[in-house]
Image (tube, rainbow over the protein chains, first blue to last red):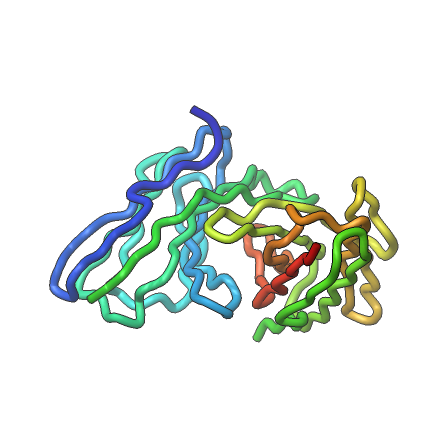
Length: 116
Length: 109
Protein backbone atom coordinates (compact mmCIF):
# COMPACT_ATOMS: atom_id res chain seq x y z
CA UNK A 1 0.00 0.00 0.00
CA UNK A 2 1.34 3.44 -0.92
CA UNK A 3 0.63 7.07 -0.11
CA UNK A 4 -1.48 8.39 2.74
CA UNK A 5 -4.52 6.47 3.93
CA UNK A 6 -7.26 7.55 6.30
CA UNK A 7 -9.97 5.61 8.09
CA UNK A 8 -12.86 5.80 8.36
CA UNK A 9 -13.82 7.66 5.18
CA UNK A 10 -17.17 8.68 6.64
CA UNK A 11 -18.22 9.08 10.26
CA UNK A 12 -21.49 10.15 11.85
CA UNK A 13 -21.41 10.71 15.58
CA UNK A 14 -23.51 12.22 18.32
CA UNK A 15 -22.25 15.03 20.51
CA UNK A 16 -21.65 12.67 23.44
CA UNK A 17 -19.72 10.03 21.48
CA UNK A 18 -16.00 9.38 21.48
CA UNK A 19 -14.37 8.35 18.22
CA UNK A 20 -10.93 8.35 16.63
CA UNK A 21 -9.68 9.11 13.14
CA UNK A 22 -6.65 7.23 11.88
CA UNK A 23 -4.03 8.27 9.35
CA UNK A 24 -1.16 6.19 8.03
CA UNK A 25 1.58 7.19 5.60
CA UNK A 26 3.78 4.79 3.66
CA UNK A 27 6.13 7.42 2.23
CA UNK A 28 8.86 7.43 4.85
CA UNK A 29 8.04 11.02 5.80
CA UNK A 30 8.91 12.69 9.06
CA UNK A 31 6.14 15.28 9.34
CA UNK A 32 2.39 14.67 9.61
CA UNK A 33 -0.49 17.12 9.72
CA UNK A 34 -4.20 17.33 10.53
CA UNK A 35 -6.33 19.84 8.62
CA UNK A 36 -10.01 20.75 8.82
CA UNK A 37 -11.74 21.62 5.55
CA UNK A 38 -15.12 23.32 5.65
CA UNK A 39 -17.05 24.43 2.57
CA UNK A 40 -15.82 27.65 0.97
CA UNK A 41 -13.15 28.17 3.65
CA UNK A 42 -9.38 27.74 3.57
CA UNK A 43 -7.91 24.52 4.82
CA UNK A 44 -7.35 25.07 8.52
CA UNK A 45 -4.18 23.62 9.95
CA UNK A 46 -4.91 21.93 13.27
CA UNK A 47 -1.80 20.05 14.34
CA UNK A 48 1.71 19.35 13.09
CA UNK A 49 3.99 16.55 14.20
CA UNK A 50 7.62 16.26 13.18
CA UNK A 51 9.64 13.21 14.20
CA UNK A 52 6.69 12.29 16.47
CA UNK A 53 6.91 15.58 18.35
CA UNK A 54 4.05 18.07 18.20
CA UNK A 55 5.39 21.30 16.72
CA UNK A 56 2.14 23.14 16.10
CA UNK A 57 -1.21 23.35 17.82
CA UNK A 58 -3.23 25.95 16.02
CA UNK A 59 -5.49 26.96 18.91
CA UNK A 60 -7.60 23.85 18.48
CA UNK A 61 -10.30 23.14 21.10
CA UNK A 62 -9.42 20.44 23.58
CA UNK A 63 -12.26 18.24 22.32
CA UNK A 64 -9.77 17.36 19.54
CA UNK A 65 -6.80 15.38 20.83
CA UNK A 66 -3.99 14.24 18.51
CA UNK A 67 -1.71 11.28 19.02
CA UNK A 68 1.40 10.34 17.05
CA UNK A 69 2.84 7.02 18.25
CA UNK A 70 5.41 6.87 15.44
CA UNK A 71 6.33 8.70 12.25
CA UNK A 72 3.94 6.60 10.17
CA UNK A 73 0.76 6.89 12.21
CA UNK A 74 -1.35 9.80 13.36
CA UNK A 75 -4.63 9.75 15.24
CA UNK A 76 -7.22 12.39 16.02
CA UNK A 77 -9.32 11.52 19.06
CA UNK A 78 -12.73 13.18 19.15
CA UNK A 79 -15.03 13.69 22.15
CA UNK A 80 -18.05 15.85 22.95
CA UNK A 81 -17.97 17.46 19.52
CA UNK A 82 -20.33 20.19 18.33
CA UNK A 83 -22.37 20.27 15.10
CA UNK A 84 -20.07 23.05 13.79
CA UNK A 85 -17.22 20.53 13.90
CA UNK A 86 -18.80 18.72 10.94
CA UNK A 87 -16.27 18.95 8.12
CA UNK A 88 -13.76 17.01 6.05
CA UNK A 89 -10.70 16.15 8.13
CA UNK A 90 -7.59 15.73 6.05
CA UNK A 91 -4.32 14.16 7.04
CA UNK A 92 -1.11 14.99 5.19
CA UNK A 93 2.57 14.11 5.40
CA UNK A 94 5.77 15.64 4.11
CA UNK A 95 9.44 14.84 4.14
CA UNK A 96 9.91 17.43 6.86
CA UNK A 97 13.66 17.20 6.92
CA UNK A 98 14.07 20.96 7.31
CA UNK A 99 16.32 21.28 4.28
CA UNK A 100 14.06 23.79 2.55
CA UNK A 101 12.56 23.44 -0.88
CA UNK A 102 8.97 22.58 -1.50
CA UNK A 103 8.47 20.10 1.33
CA UNK A 104 5.45 18.98 -0.67
CA UNK A 105 2.55 17.78 1.41
CA UNK A 106 0.80 14.58 0.38
CA UNK A 107 -2.82 14.38 1.47
CA UNK A 108 -5.00 11.45 2.36
CA UNK A 109 -8.57 11.18 1.04
CA UNK A 110 -10.04 12.59 4.23
CA UNK A 111 -12.72 11.60 6.72
CA UNK A 112 -16.12 13.21 6.19
CA UNK A 113 -17.36 13.85 9.73
CA UNK A 114 -20.96 14.66 10.59
CA UNK A 115 -21.82 15.59 14.17
CA UNK A 116 -25.51 15.32 15.01
CA UNK B 1 -2.16 36.87 10.82
CA UNK B 2 -1.94 35.02 7.54
CA UNK B 3 -4.06 36.11 4.59
CA UNK B 4 -4.26 34.67 1.08
CA UNK B 5 -6.76 36.03 -1.44
CA UNK B 6 -7.86 34.26 -4.61
CA UNK B 7 -11.05 34.42 -6.68
CA UNK B 8 -13.80 32.05 -5.57
CA UNK B 9 -14.93 30.86 -9.00
CA UNK B 10 -13.85 30.85 -12.62
CA UNK B 11 -15.72 29.38 -15.60
CA UNK B 12 -14.19 28.81 -19.03
CA UNK B 13 -14.65 26.65 -22.11
CA UNK B 14 -12.52 23.73 -23.23
CA UNK B 15 -9.31 24.84 -24.89
CA UNK B 16 -9.30 28.22 -23.18
CA UNK B 17 -6.68 29.71 -20.85
CA UNK B 18 -7.44 30.51 -17.22
CA UNK B 19 -5.31 32.54 -14.82
CA UNK B 20 -5.91 32.24 -11.08
CA UNK B 21 -4.37 35.07 -9.09
CA UNK B 22 -3.23 34.83 -5.49
CA UNK B 23 -2.12 37.67 -3.24
CA UNK B 24 -0.75 36.97 0.18
CA UNK B 25 0.19 38.58 3.47
CA UNK B 26 2.08 36.20 5.73
CA UNK B 27 4.50 36.50 8.61
CA UNK B 28 7.15 34.45 6.79
CA UNK B 29 7.71 33.32 3.22
CA UNK B 30 9.50 30.23 2.02
CA UNK B 31 7.56 29.79 -1.21
CA UNK B 32 4.18 29.70 -2.95
CA UNK B 33 2.57 26.38 -3.82
CA UNK B 34 -0.51 25.40 -5.77
CA UNK B 35 -2.70 22.39 -5.05
CA UNK B 36 -5.57 20.90 -7.04
CA UNK B 37 -8.55 19.19 -5.45
CA UNK B 38 -11.24 17.39 -7.40
CA UNK B 39 -14.66 17.13 -5.84
CA UNK B 40 -14.55 14.38 -3.20
CA UNK B 41 -10.81 13.93 -3.58
CA UNK B 42 -7.62 14.84 -1.76
CA UNK B 43 -5.60 17.97 -2.55
CA UNK B 44 -2.65 17.14 -4.80
CA UNK B 45 0.49 19.19 -5.36
CA UNK B 46 0.81 21.05 -8.66
CA UNK B 47 3.70 23.50 -8.43
CA UNK B 48 6.01 25.51 -6.21
CA UNK B 49 7.76 28.86 -6.64
CA UNK B 50 10.42 30.02 -4.21
CA UNK B 51 11.99 32.61 -6.52
CA UNK B 52 10.49 35.22 -8.82
CA UNK B 53 9.53 34.11 -12.27
CA UNK B 54 7.60 31.55 -14.20
CA UNK B 55 7.69 27.77 -13.67
CA UNK B 56 6.19 25.65 -16.42
CA UNK B 57 4.96 22.09 -16.03
CA UNK B 58 3.12 20.89 -19.09
CA UNK B 59 -0.16 22.77 -19.53
CA UNK B 60 0.16 24.41 -16.12
CA UNK B 61 2.47 27.30 -15.26
CA UNK B 62 2.95 29.20 -12.02
CA UNK B 63 4.36 32.66 -11.49
CA UNK B 64 5.67 34.50 -8.45
CA UNK B 65 6.55 38.11 -7.69
CA UNK B 66 7.83 38.34 -4.14
CA UNK B 67 8.04 42.13 -4.21
CA UNK B 68 4.31 42.28 -5.01
CA UNK B 69 3.35 39.36 -2.73
CA UNK B 70 1.56 37.96 -5.75
CA UNK B 71 1.46 34.84 -7.79
CA UNK B 72 -0.73 33.12 -10.32
CA UNK B 73 -1.50 29.72 -11.74
CA UNK B 74 -2.03 29.54 -15.49
CA UNK B 75 -4.04 26.68 -16.91
CA UNK B 76 -3.69 26.33 -20.68
CA UNK B 77 -5.59 24.22 -23.21
CA UNK B 78 -8.30 23.62 -20.64
CA UNK B 79 -9.77 20.14 -20.50
CA UNK B 80 -12.92 18.89 -18.78
CA UNK B 81 -10.76 17.02 -16.26
CA UNK B 82 -9.33 20.36 -15.11
CA UNK B 83 -12.64 21.16 -13.41
CA UNK B 84 -11.58 21.27 -9.76
CA UNK B 85 -10.70 23.60 -6.92
CA UNK B 86 -7.27 25.19 -6.94
CA UNK B 87 -5.61 26.41 -3.75
CA UNK B 88 -2.63 28.67 -3.37
CA UNK B 89 -0.58 28.08 -0.24
CA UNK B 90 2.32 29.90 1.34
CA UNK B 91 4.99 28.00 3.23
CA UNK B 92 5.62 30.43 6.07
CA UNK B 93 7.77 28.28 8.32
CA UNK B 94 9.61 25.00 8.20
CA UNK B 95 6.53 22.84 8.50
CA UNK B 96 3.53 25.07 7.99
CA UNK B 97 1.41 25.88 4.95
CA UNK B 98 -1.25 28.57 5.00
CA UNK B 99 -3.92 28.03 2.34
CA UNK B 100 -6.23 30.32 0.42
CA UNK B 101 -9.96 29.55 0.31
CA UNK B 102 -9.67 28.01 -3.14
CA UNK B 103 -10.85 28.82 -6.65
CA UNK B 104 -13.42 26.55 -8.22
CA UNK B 105 -12.71 26.17 -11.92
CA UNK B 106 -15.58 24.93 -14.08
CA UNK B 107 -14.77 23.89 -17.63
CA UNK B 108 -17.67 23.89 -20.09
CA UNK B 109 -17.81 22.01 -23.37
